[in-house]
Length: 290
Image 1 (cartoon, rainbow, N blue to C red):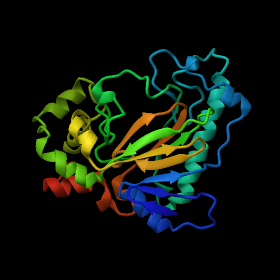
Image 2 (cartoon, rainbow, N blue to C red):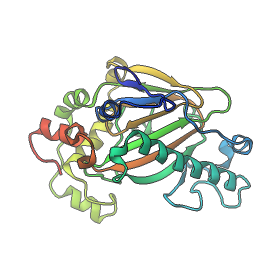
Image 3 (cartoon, rainbow, N blue to C red):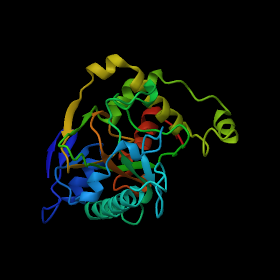
Image 4 (cartoon, helix red, strand yellow):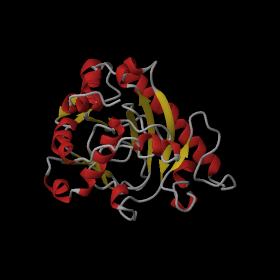
């Protein structure tokens, strides 16, 4: 394992890992870079990597946990079975990698959908809030998570040798200290109203309100996007990277064809819960946010 600021390089083939140091890096917001993942595509899977298989308007193809059919690919599509096999294999492999690297989490992780991203990043047209080429931390407006961690395992499967290029920004506390003073306050009763109207899937806590507006404030501030401390990292085909995407400031700049697995984890089930964004924001705000 080698470390350079916000990026930590991990060799899965190494006979032993300093697991305490590794989980410490992850929980402080580093992106773990695995230069070579032990996951190979079959010739049929490679041949099926074509955006034409995605239903029009879908950003991602996804497979729910324990699912038997893909969302975002027509069941009658000849490539459906091949892509389903690919995504299912990746879901199982990603769980094995996380269980191996982070045995502390093993009994606590909740699997979310696995996704296959076929579209090219650079040609995606979207609003500034959905523009993931701008540095941000993940927060979901319709799915308040009330402090739950978002752990993601990515892999570049580009068959043409193209890297997937990310920018990685400042540590979470630095970002929070910069933007907290300018975030709007949560209006009394708004959380219950949004939940009753179906705008959110559950009540939006003060934490969720802050995270949503932190996400937006980061993306809206173009001077910050240009001038904040950051590094650019190309992830080569066959490489993987792992991070808590609600904590690691990140942006995707270019690339095509990627697999991604998300897991949820309660902050109390971390090795050091005080490193969670919830704990950091509560300390800075001086009050409970849940």
